[in-house]
Image (tube, rainbow, N blue to C red; front, side, top):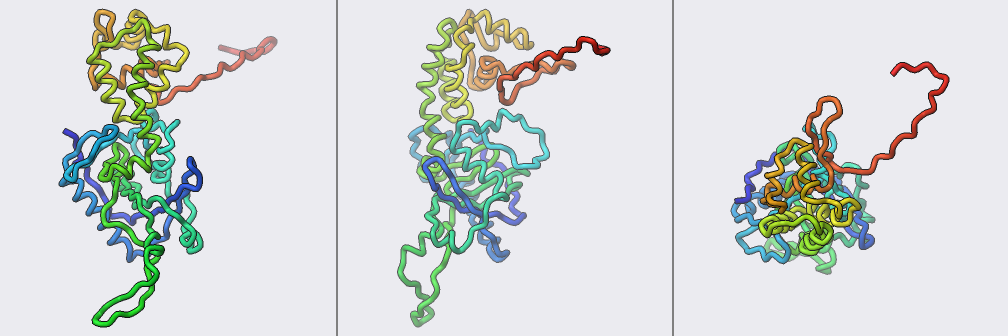
Length: 340
């Protein structure tokens, strides 16, 4: 059962941003300066969304999932970077945003303080795609954002004139800004809660496409590993886990294209596991990879070469993200007096 019991701390002042796409792959957002009179209503939108989520049945998101009225879908957002200044230590690999355009939106949610302020001129010309109400430390000390795929200035174009009625109809000034009562998505550091599937599909279209490609990526990995067989249970575990974890989906896709992958055999995998102090029987039996859902991440780590031991303490560690390190050329120390 998926846990959505996370507590939220919404006592701090909220942040409101609005965003649009100026180009297909370029997101632009603005921070909205808020009067304190807006805080109660913004907090009310967040609480109403949380209440709807609490009454819903949480299900794992998968491509083409139809979310019923009584459900919300949950997708892993492990690639979301932590808020700047987060106190706890962070495993960088859990927050790898490389290659995910949807991470552009996540970065805006994470660091709204650096955005340009919304002005009346921008408001007048803006065809906005979304807005988000953000508490940088509202989710147990980490980010929580309530995102809606809705143009908050659309109301200005939907009516020519506005009126009030208190027994007599009177012309009144129209609103500049309108917000929906319930958000479409709740974004935390651990997951995205999806209340409206079409909002996720549009705002995170590239992430969705990456998850949709999992089946092809599994086939490509099998082709790239001709000497390493996977059991049907293992393949099912890889498909199911990578289909809901965007970072894993991307890693799976990249893994089949790496230089070293074709050389991996059962014997080499066994030796690598032993070298890192792991029991090979947890991953491979009779020359066939045998894993369950909980071991998919570790298998990807090993195949990518992310496990290592600290030079002096020999503490087992995991490289959050790996890049090729250039060797420093040896210096010519001839004629110098150096103690080594």
